[in-house]
Length: 222
Ligand code: DX5
Ligand code: ZN
Image (tube, rainbow, N blue to C red; front, side, top):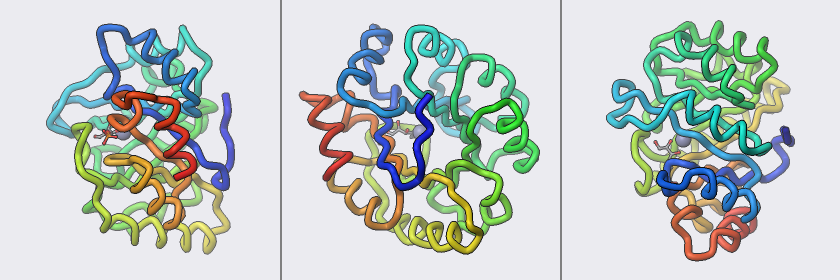
């Protein structure tokens, strides 16, 4: 498991954009192309208007590979399903601040299980909603699209939230990663690094690139 620090650049291809008919070889392809982490988008058809996959997929990927699994729960009751995603082999679990749960308690449970804990903000959610938890997280995910679907356009208005998160991280002496997710490719990654993010989730621009390793390289060093 490679945890890295918030000073390191991390590229996390999102499996949502992979070819589901050959998931095992798609994961190997991402690893060989230089993926640092693999991002797994779990959607319940309720918190977001799409249904993707659940713990069985996380377990399958975990059993075939050593890559760090960054699991993004877009589900209404993350606390209810938490143990299943922990048992499935997640390395980091991110939960939305907007979901229906005791956020502090869910984050505590993730860390108690020995995993990294992430907190996610939708584009419309202000940073103040995450502020009470900033000392208790390993990663803050600022969504750069409205979650639910891959292939959407990056929302530049989120950049200000990222810069503000950097300021608050210093204020609290915290060391969480800042991750962005949605519409990330080399050009938008550059804007996100400048604002202070270090973990780039990228679905379409990696799995659907002609040359995945060139795509990952260009997102890491735009
Ligand atoms: C969106 C998901 C993303 C998605 C990103 O709801 O959280 O992780 O897979 O896809 P792209 O990179 O295609 O915007
Ligand atoms: Zn995601």
